[in-house]
Amino acid sequence: MKQKIAVAFVAATAALYLGAQPAASTRDGVYSEAQAGRGQASYKAACASCHGEALEGGGAAYPPLAGEDFFNNWAGANLNDLFDRIQTTMPGDRPGKLSRAENADILAYILKVNKMPAGAKDLPTDAEALKKIKIEAPAQ
Image (cartoon, rainbow, N blue to C red):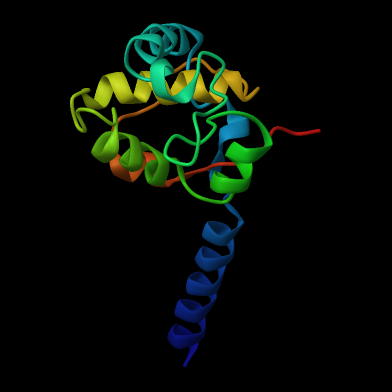
């Protein structure tokens, strides 16, 4: 009986501890300044002709990648959702042309333009790591 209680206590404590761990957020400095700089160059070369120099969008086919419209579309999603959309459908004239590293750089640039803070490390390129990062609007 004591063993069952001890096991239940350990399981409950672990569940509370794991449940209390916050998921990472775009507010947590998940990309580096250097990565955003690389992303800006890649964005200008591969994305700006459709999404605009200021990420303002180019109609229904090319939605804004900055500002309120961007957060209305993506807030609450994880970064892998957006990364996967970029990886599989962009650039519009040659989907999948860019490497995962180039797309991570572009995503870092999008976060920077959207006033997300930079951190010390580059944004990862693997899906599992990106799934753990929630897209949130900047703190007001």
